[in-house]
Image (cartoon, rainbow, N blue to C red):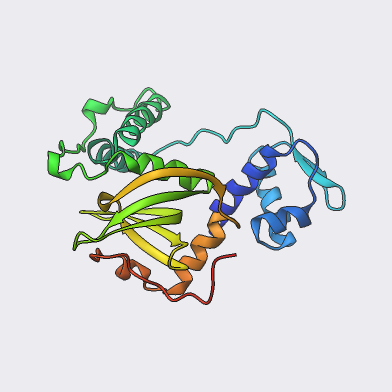
Length: 247
């Protein structure tokens, strides 16, 4: 986990706690050393986070803190416009709507000299019907990933052979011409990759899969450090050979 991701996660954990929490407990939850927790707390304090407490007493974040607004350069704004425009044209309807509102918020934070969206030097062309690759179930899978919920799916391979599975969805990988769900498959007791256009979500279960998603995701990546090439679209879920199920 990068330092930036770790700091954001620490901030999220502190926001969820109303009582002081020790550095040791934070370290266990974030799977880092207590020393890293102390450093990250000082980083958050340096940008204005009102974190009370000290070593041996625990830490608590006073309510009402928000990260400062970001000031985007012209090139950074162009990059955001291109990325959000791509999502708006090619993602599932729910994500497309969110990309439109996100872009409006970003443009609204610009200063007086900022160009309106129509005057920006970059533009994303409208996607054809064939390029709109994300089926509605992509939104269901994203929500299951956020909530760490198991999902019952029906998957059909390139030969038309269907199977029923319960999976632990961990991430959706976006390739140019396909979307792939990486998940732990209970049926195979291994990580598998599923093309989203070949699966149906039967039900998002109330069962929460064990462990932290970030830990499971790291283990998925560690199974084969060349996982990006493995995920170039195969006709069937690509198997891994893990030492055992994720923690």
